Length: 376
Image 1 (cartoon, helix red, strand yellow):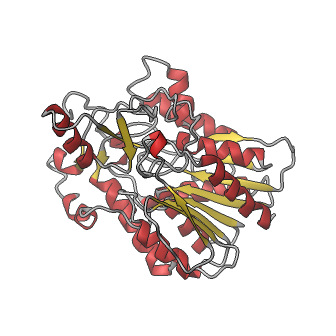
Image 2 (tube, rainbow, N blue to C red; image 1 turned 135 degrees about the vertical axis):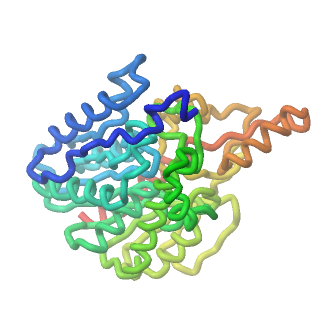
Image 3 (tube, rainbow, N blue to C red; image 1 turned 120 degrees about the vertical axis):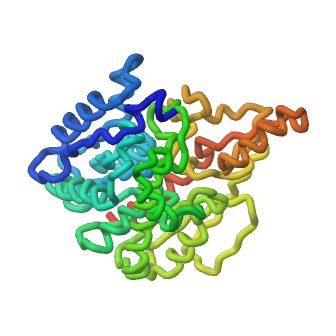
């Protein structure tokens, strides 16, 4: 794969427009679109759609002078596209919504070979600084690694009105995170720089993962632990899947319970009957037998069932179309490989797929709205 598609797995050494706080957001979008257009290797079909879906975006409310704004921060391997459904809802609630593109993303996986979490934080700083020029109060909305970046910024800065976190990546469920630093020294062996290599078949999300990307998320999590999430004095809203196999839900719950703000809220989805003494935590069932949904996976939460790419009628190759012979849930690559092997041997007729949509999206977004209304 490395030899077949060399440009995809090489660092394109991109200079990102995130250091000039005088650069207005519309120009930031245009410069980011040019970066995508100059770097992508798959623009032979639907180039305008690919560029638009991967680029930063802005959603303006009806009010020409909104008081509140939301900065959307996507996760590792993702693009701003993953935040669009949440963004449209926040726009409908009267917020000026902007989504940034984290360095290393939306282009080629090789762009993550040398990027650092400091660059990601700089992108957040840029987004906050420019949004502050147009609104009075800012909410940070982060998915996965974007949630960790939002928390880090809020711990260091006191200009944030509240946090909305979806499956925050405070801790990754991977035994290789602590090894990533040492594997990175083997730069002379190109394959050793990659944790996983795959054909890139999703135009808005990487499939291949460099070790450096994992290491940067690990380091970011350590930085947050040093300060302590319990020191957050601003309101926090969180949603997560207990069965998430990419990030550690237990760590997120532990951090949430240490927070003290009375308006803090958390929604925990699980196929188990869990009970928490903290009244700020709301449990929601993630098992939908009629839809063949066993539980929620990592990508589930921010995606509406009507999403044109990942939704029930989505154009993505592995979108959850909720077919009867497929079981959807929090499966990792190992689960799917084992299932595919059993199917080839004729030992099962069922197929496993990761759930790519949130059947409870309507309820979740309304809970998010209730949280915001208390802060307005």
